[in-house]
Image 1 (tube, one colour):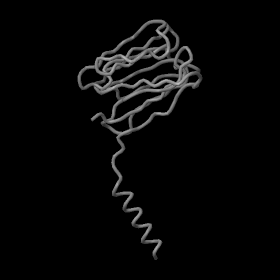
Image 2: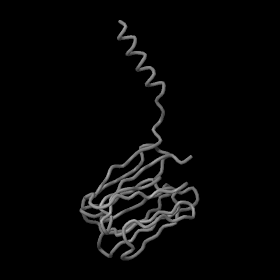
Image 3: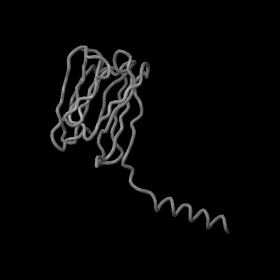
Image 4: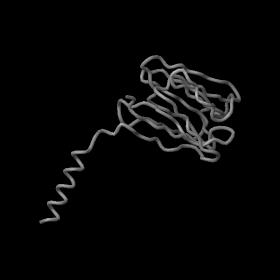
Length: 158
């Protein structure tokens, strides 16, 4: 009887403390070779730059937080594609294709706009937050000349 009371109290405490999950993580896609990277900053993401080679993979990526651009991850080879986000616009989905390198990326916002770069070849992936009010906060992964892996980190911005 004592064990049943203890177990019931433990379950009640667990559910009493349960809160909505405001952070989620989209696991790595790509081969994962090379050096690890993280692109993060203060506040909301306000811009994206992606370097692609025509009919090829993603060479480099850069995010802007407020008015400050992060360092470039990868290289600035090929054509640069850029999207500036509007006030109250947030990235809510990342999809694309991967093989050894990240072949293509599509960043979609809560307003329906998107930024597309790269080649449509390889395995498909789709990343998004588990909480409906969350947005992309930062990315991480691996790079070896070009991006070889990508992970997404989502959270509700205060």
